[in-house]
Figure (tube, protein in one colour):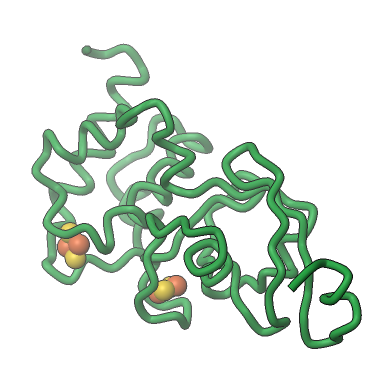
Length: 168
Ligand code: FES
Ligand code: FES
C-alpha cells in the first residue's frame, strides 16, 4: 500500500523511522508492533519474537538509544525516532560484546541472545563499569530458558573490562 493509500485508511499508519542509521518508511496496520514492523515489513529478523507481551526480552532493541521491548511499542510510536537492532549493532562484524558472549560460552541458543546483547549493550553504554548485581538487574528482563546466566554475566563483565582497557 502506498503512503497515499495509507493516508486514506484510518486503520493503517505510515511511519518514518531511522533504522540502523537509514530512514525507512513503514506502512502497517495501526495495531502492529515495532517488532512486527522490523521483522515482517523490514525483514530484520535478528530481533526475535517470543512472548509478544513484554515478558521475555527476546525482542529488545534500542529506541533512541534506550533498550525497549519492541513487542510493546507500536510501529506508529516509532515515527520520527531512531531504532537500533542487533543487525545495526554488528554491521562491521561481531562487536566486542558479542565476542565475549562467544568466549564465555554464553550462547546456548539463537533466540534469547540478540535481546541479551542489546540489553547488555545499553547497560554498558550507560554504566561502563557495572557491578555484578547491576548486570543481573539490567538483564533481569531477558529470560534465558537454559539458565545460562552465569556465563552471560561473565561475558558482560569481560566486555566492561575490555572497554576499560584492563586487557585485550
Ligand atoms: S517478545 Fe517482546 S518481551 Fe517477549
Ligand atoms: S541462551 Fe537462549 S535460552 Fe539460554
